[in-house]
Length: 245
Length: 232
Image 1: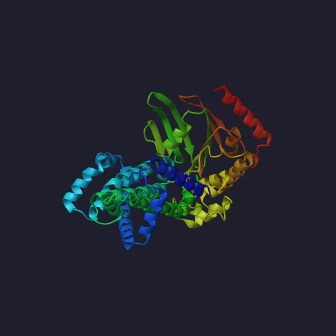
Image 2 (image 1 turned 180 degrees about the vertical axis):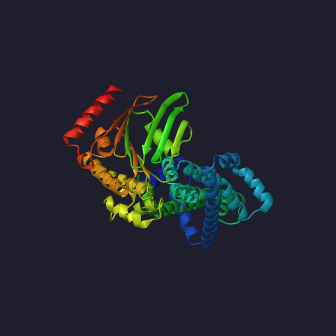
Image 3 (image 1 turned 120 degrees about the vertical axis):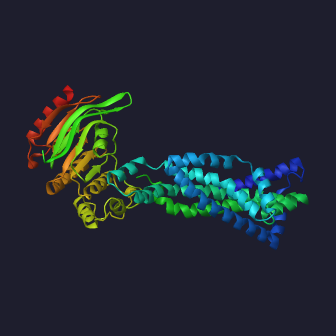
């Protein structure tokens, strides 16, 4: 109920500002935007674009998890590995998207690979550092307990380190899910051949501002929906991790 | 001596500029039980870590004539995301033994519970079961009852004493509570302030049946012990 009230207040404020400003090129009214949204809803192109953005986002999510978590794990478990990888990961994190863009256009041109690579490189450091900090924050008392009982190292890694890591993996996935849409849409806008970002780029060329807003609403809705689904899925699994011993 | 399970000679330990243990000497024979009482920060837990081979940064000689050690930590140190049974199989695969000790510690039926679903006393019992299933020659108790209320504490002590009479493992126990010490130990070592020394080695001349806190002799021994502790 409160959420609906919040949305209503937001829409009213939007309407008021659009009337006061009276510059549809900057801020179209909610009516114009939702009209554009309803046009998009009946066009096949829209669904193809959404599908294109969704699969690229999923691909980025999976590759970031598959690559970032193992690297982060070994960085967390060994100080030497951490020090070896940290500079490279920090550099990747600091490189602006525009630099990657120049590189991927040069290598692959316009297409699906560019947005995926840019998305991957933008989100990889987050997954690495979150995983590493998860491993580093493993309860040292549990490790000490395992040493007293001479538990084999493989078992310590499997049960204690990986177990400690689970909440961090889920929070990494949550963060990535929240960010991946934005990154992919931006990358599509800059170097994609299909997807929501490409539709936004075309709408910009035709100065169709309500359409830009409508596509933005679709992107935001995808982001919120995926985050909610992930949270609901994780809540049950994470039940036993959230309660302190 | 052939029966010596642990011999400590001139043990010294410091944390940088802070000397903590200053020349401890002690000997523990098989099946013997000692309790150590001393002020906070005098190196009791550090000493236990040295015995358990978790800390090798010390001076002096520590001779360990045992293979298996059971360590009951001050806090239960149970892995929160796995069940009681999985916490126990983490250290030993002997399920028959696990079931035996779970029964002995009145934890039957809680095998599939997560640690968070247990009370403080029950967690401490699991901590104890974990120490016992490795068939220890020496059981180390690091203030295991500090957070428990009196009835729970003495119920667990009774269980430990019963099991110890059966399994005959040696015990080294740290406590601040003279009642706990007298209930469980053959000797009580009193430690001085940091840098600590073992200043008294008090023999507890009580038979098993007499280790009852309402027993007159128990009360007298406790009173004498308290005087000695206050003296240092």
